Image 1 (cartoon, rainbow, N blue to C red):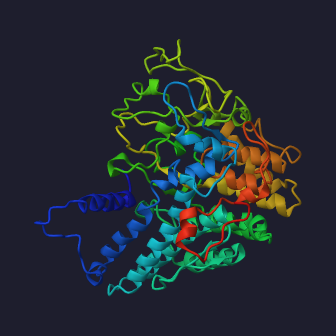
Image 2 (image 1 turned 180 degrees about the vertical axis):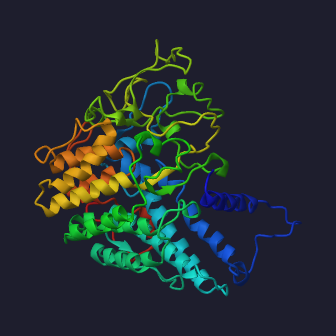
Image 3 (image 1 turned 90 degrees about the vertical axis):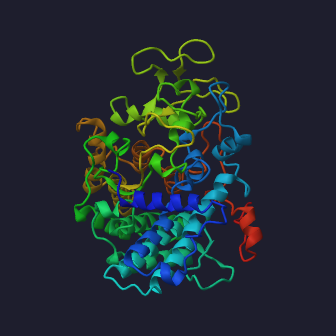
Length: 510
């Protein structure tokens, strides 16, 4: 059964649709005095849901964080296929992959929007809950939870855009000023350190999809792991401490089957620390990997009604080739002839059986079957229109925490794998292979190999961009992309944002 946060979001979505009615003879039940709305604990809890609801579409959309954090990397490519539908959008996906970034690209604008809309929503709700006459035991915890969600949004903005505006005061209506990355880092760190002692200590059904104490630890671990790159100050020991808080808490394990983290009803995963809940009944666009990656000819196989598929996003050949054929994680990536579930062949549009190949020969005009397709998330049957897939999207997983701790340990150790780092990585490795025959040794586990292992484990999970930058690989040339300049480690601030706030300066190079 989908947990409470999904139902809260569903209620909020229904409220938004109901407010679209224009029959002026009806009583306007949506108009409620703000002093009355936050008069009970339940009303405060429901208000919190609106802060989370804004994450659902842009958080996992190509026209949002998925476009900026996946398409721009060496793991994904979106060629224009000649048949079976296409995903062109005036070349924006090819430009993003080639690091031809501009302040006008929709996914970059939407990534800024999701970050700062979330901050603004949290500011308002924190103010209203603080000033609510309702008194209950969990009130300070609610505020801490919203501060943590706001800190996550600022952490994402810090990662993507560098020097950012920060305003934590709802009553301050002035245009926020841009501050340095170091100043913003310190503010976010302070917010999290002050908030986490008041958060829900352990995962639970009631807190599924919400910011708990381990979520705050995971954000801090990410910040500390990237601190040397972002602010010039190594904080690897701090990263280890935050990972230890999660590991020693004993609340998470590696699922025995890697694929269980990505099945349709994956909210039972004991590996997921924080998930973005998705469910078709809620009615938003959500997570649409089926539309991004499938060929039109597969509509019937998955009983997709009143919709289409864009035959678009593929894993790059180089990333696919990094998998050993004994690695079970490769099963989430589809190549070869396509069949219906009864064994009948699926026919393509260019003659013969539809067959996916790992090689993409031309970004601008690629045959219908070129490219490795993403089947990592189990594709539900019977979706219609623009319905989201039902799979919840993991924002933080325990496997990532283990690999992060190993990396921090290696960096403290001069880039050399210690026995502790080796044991952490091999936990993930053994799950992937089902045995210890492919385990690393201290000689074979280098930082470059750790980056490759992170790529295999966390592919398409909106993590690769940050990893490539931290490992110094972001500017490297790869197929279809020439070497790119260091300034492109940050995205441009969207032009409409600069026009709206004269306190902001564009990032260098744009």
